[in-house]
Length: 186
Image (tube, rainbow, N blue to C red; front, side, top):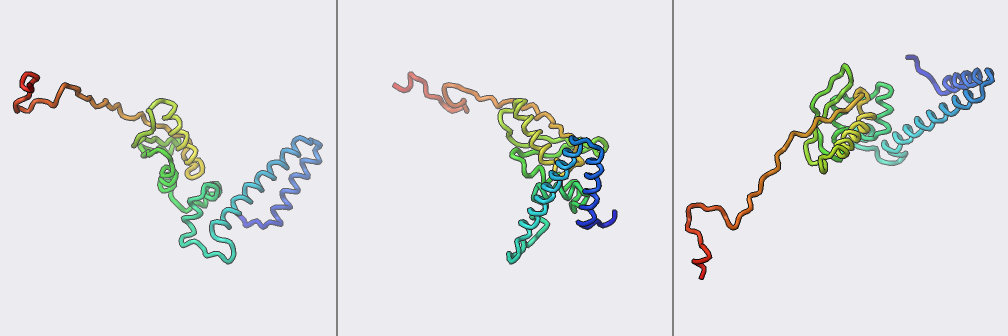
């Protein structure tokens, strides 16, 4: 890919917008201008975040600039979008999962279809389907910017756990020692 400077890129965008306007389709022309505006805002926000994270002029730069950049969802998504993220998939998945409100662990990833299977490792509420779905959705949202290779998240059902039985009796269990009966108490 050849390096593109701002002047060349701006000229190419103007040419495309002019061609659309010449065709007389005002809706298509307006839509194209909206797309350009949204993309400019998106990239402008990303560049602004990079400047903020690395420190404004005169500010002390962070000790590890990559940590600041890779921990930011917007910057990480831009790096991923362009194939520039320096971390391997495994590290990016772990980064995304570590930020979730419920602890999960990987149960497997199939790169052929992009499915990541997860298992909840701690309490995620009542265990009802809506809570499980919120855990799955939170993982999918976090992975969308950090690991776009993951196209679907499946949550393995939590292992069927039997509730602990609580034995309720009138006193402590007999250990072979003499027990006091109501008649002895008088």
